[in-house]
Length: 109
Image (cartoon, rainbow, N blue to C red; front, side, top):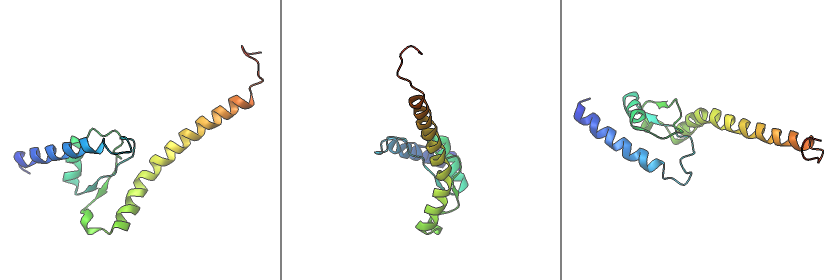
């Protein structure tokens, strides 16, 4: 890839990255990229999106059915969702423990 082509692609990817953070999910949703390795690595270089999933879907996504893309993508984001769920669950459990051990006395009676 020539330097000129790489510069144009990086600029394009930065534009996409900028718009991605404006989506209604507020830049919180995990994002999986799909594409040939050379373009995916270039996108990662350009991206500042904080929730870009480490792994992507390799290959030409145009050769996959939407169901296949969904299945592979879900397989990559599921662990992210499970971690978030575990963190929320442990917070809820800690609050539940605190409430169940609260005897109503202020100052540690």
